[in-house]
Each structure stands twice: as structure tokens, then as C-alpha cells.
Image 1 (cartoon, helix red, strand yellow):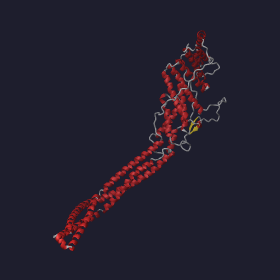
Image 2: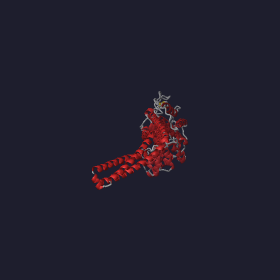
Image 3: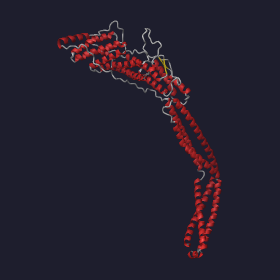
Image 4: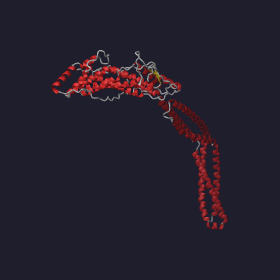
Length: 582
């Protein structure tokens, strides 16, 4: 009878690793209390409390449901992500949040300790699940592979996080028999767990080779590798180790027969049957003796027949010793979706973003208020007709200049007439009468100027209070113009904290700049309120005189323009007269 691998290949053995016990604990509650009570942080992200509660719930689930069903296997990733994110930049020591994770009687503040111990239990649970699945079809093999992939990925992660100060501490580390009890939390145990997963992966690969009809020598080499892996783990796996060693020799026997190397086939066969059956004194292991019996059933007869045929036909001398060709352990990284199903943001980032957002929104709002105030000030300042006043002032300056030039030319012509009457009479017979006419026109224009100048001064006096208010408004407007840039500067300063700052430093920075910004906003609001009062005064004052002042300015402007035209004409005529008189 030939051993049927499809139905008799043993399952992955039970992991034989004890679960690490932990006391009930609510890390989310500890985090929330520390942040709200000790750090006095009230500006929390909307989902912060909810995530803290979820952290507690998931921890209870992971402790109580050790063999996670497939639909719940994301819980470990969720727990790691929540725990890592919620505690980032938080002081977990006694002087901080005083986080006390207790596993196997060991207390530690580190979240790495929590992740290592919780991850260890999740891996043991996955391996226990895998050990309950028979290798009967491809679907079962895929289910086992999924368990092993996740177990390996988690085991790699927790082994990287493991530190020697995590090790269990027991006052009496001995069993009832007096023998040393192995520590559950130890580097050796974590390493052994990782090696056990590697052995399980080789175990699953052997069945995969059978399904895919891979070469028999590969099957043999994998079996021998697995036998070695199990035997190196513990005496507990001796039976299953022996099973795969026998299987490896039997498959190499088949391989050698197929290649007609009868001497090697006999040597491999003898190695297989030398174990025969487990002795009656051997303790029951992972593989019951019937498995070995079934494996070897009929093999001795086949071997004897080969020996007989070889002695009669082939004369191939069996080697004195032979081993299955060595094979390197399979590379196996594992696979697990660490993103989980819960996304959150660490408190430091959310606090920083909250500060950034708060400052940005506050400064934007303040800038809008400043711009509105500046626009209102500009409208109020425009109540005073500064442009028209400037035009009139420039006309008056031009008027003064041309009037002085007219008087100077009149004086020059007068002196020429008196000092050289005959020469002037010869050159310009009517010079005297022309001079008299120009003098009369200048005197009349002067009188007109004086009227408009008096009207102008009187009009200006009527709006002096308005002008004073407008000057004050311009000063406020200029100061507010500068504050727009200062808003941006304050926002930059508020957000300039080091990216490596601790959460407590960030919160202190938040409080400091919160006070500075509130003070600044209060100051600007005071200026804006003052501007509103001054605008109201200016508007009331403009209602009394502004329209009349503008009307007066228009009249004065026309008068000054006429005078400037008259003086310009006189200057032109007298310049021509002077040239003729000389």
C-alpha cells in the first residue's frame, strides 16, 4: 500500500507557545486624561476622544478573541496604528502620562512593549488556527498561507521592536519539578516563534509542491529541511521531525529509482526503514505512531525487492552513508496590510495644524477687517476735496509768480520811460499810453485777486475742523496699512516651532502665541473702533461745510485761472514792448 499524501500529510503542528497574560487596561483613557487634565489641551481633533475609546475596545477584543477570524484580522493593525498615533510625542513615563502596560507580571511604559506582547499573542492565535486546517485542497492551503503570511509579518515587526528590558521577571523561575521554566517574554522565545513560522511555511510549501506536481527530489529536499527545522525548535516536535525525515529518504529513494541509480536508492531506503515504528516508550507527540506506520507500510517490501533486483541485475554498490542534498531555508517575509481600517492623526500634528489653521483664519479675518476699515477711512478722507484744493493751491502759486513778473515788467518799462524819454519816444511813440493801459489792467486784476484770495481763505477756515479730522484719519489709515504685513509676520512666527518639538512644548507655544495674537487682535480692534468714531465725526463735519466748500473752491479756481490768463497776456505784451523800447 502506498502512502497517500493528499489525505495523510500531517497538518501544521500546534505551536506549543503559551499566550502572554495581560491585565485589563484602558490606554485610551490614560491618554485622554493626560492630554485634557495635565496638558490642559482643550482644542482636540473632533475624533480624538472617539479614537481613544476605540483603542480601549480593540485592546479588549484582541485579548478576549485570541484566534481572530479573517474578517477581524485588521484589528491588530488598527490597534498598532491608533496606539502609535495617539501616543506620538506624548511622554508615557511616570512623570508624564504614566502608561502602565502589564504583561506576564512585567510593567513597562513603552508602546513597543505593548505591541510586542499583543503581537506575540496574535501570532500564536494565527498559528493555532493554521494547525487546525487539513491539507486536503488548494483552498485550505491558501487559508493556511494567509495565516502564515500575517503571522510572519507581525513576528518580524515585533522582533524588531523587542528590547531586552521587556523580558519577564519571575522571582521563582522554576516549575514544580524544579526544572527552569522558560520565560515567555524573552528574545529567545520571540526568535523561536519566528523560526517556527519559517518551519510552518516550509510545511505548507511541501503540500504546494505536491499539488503542483513538482520534481520528487525537490519534495524530498524540502521534507528534509522541514525535519531539521522542527528538530531544532524543541523536543516537542520530535515525532513530526522524524516523519518528514523518513518521508525525505523515501522520496529520494523514488528519485534514485527513477534515475536507475539503484545503489543510492537502496541507501536512502535503508535510512528510511531504520526508524521502523516509534518505540512503545516514546511519549505521544504531534504525529501519532499510526502516521509513521502508514508512511512505512509496504515500503520494506519494495526496498527488499529493489535489493534483490540490484543483486541479480544491476550490481550497483550502495554507499555506506548517504544524506538528502541540503537545501537553504526558504526566504519568507510575510504579508499584512498595516494600514488597517481606522485612520487618525497624531495629536502633535493635529495640534500644530489646529494652531496653524486657527492663526491663519484669525489673521485672515483680521486682515479683512483691516481692509474694510481702510476702505471706510478712504471714503471718509475723500469727504475733504483734497485734489481740488491741491489744484487751487497750484493755481495760486502760479498766480503769485505771474503777478510778481507782471509787476517787475511794469517797473522796468516805467524806468525806461523816465530814464530815456527821447529814445523811447523815437522807438515807440505810444509807449506811455501802452504802459498806462497795462498798469490799469494789472491793478484791476490785483483787486480781483484779492477778492478771490479772501474768499479762498474764508472757505479754508470753514473746513479746518474737517481737515484736522481727515489728517487724523490718514494717520490711522497709514498705521493700518502696516498692520496687514504684520499679520503675516505673526502667522509665520506662530507656526515657526521646531518640527521636533515635544507635544508639551507645542501646547506651551500654542498658549504663548495664542495670548500674543489675542492681544494683537484686541489692539487692532481698538484702532478700528477708534477709526469708526473719527469717521462718524468727519462725516458729520463734512455734512456742515463740505458741499459749500467745494462750491467756493470752484468759484475761486475760475477766478484764479482768469487772473493767471490775464497776467500771462500782460507779460507777453510787456515783454514785446520792452524789446522795442531798448
